[in-house]
Image (cartoon, rainbow, N blue to C red):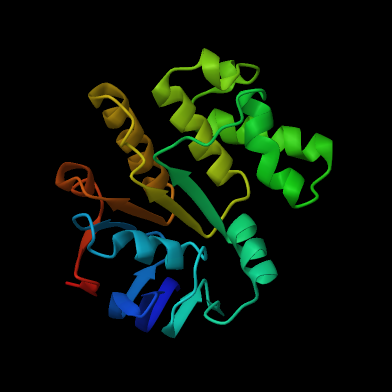
Length: 221
């Protein structure tokens, strides 16, 4: 089963009278359980591609299916629902709320989905255990290292059991030790059957993936 199916995806941005074609006919498929790195330099279109894969933006033309559902023409409300249920996001910035504990941060997607409090707590604890942070449930982000904060972000991304884990430069704010730790965690998640798409400019980080896709000038190669 393909988790991501793109056919002829174009994305054009208009700035006044100037039009910039960020993606030019992208077609690709990523199967369930694959670990794929999308690599490209600044300005290559990889951020635009990430936004479309993550349903943060829509193609100007072309088709995109996520886990079999055509998301190319969905409303913003429907896209928000898909982002919350089907995609787990891990960003370079950890995006944790500093006033909340690790467990409460991980609970947030479930709260938005209306999951009862007791079930939220149980699932958040399970997700934190999966990333090796059972002993940090009550710690706030400021009491955790950078690597631990990124693990909390991964736990939050996994708590809804999404079809896709989408990581955008997830090691960008980590030192070399924490980077190796994070990539080891992705290896473990992939071994468990999780579908992972990693966006990076770092060839060494990309090399850890099962497959690498290059993007340049809005075209995949």
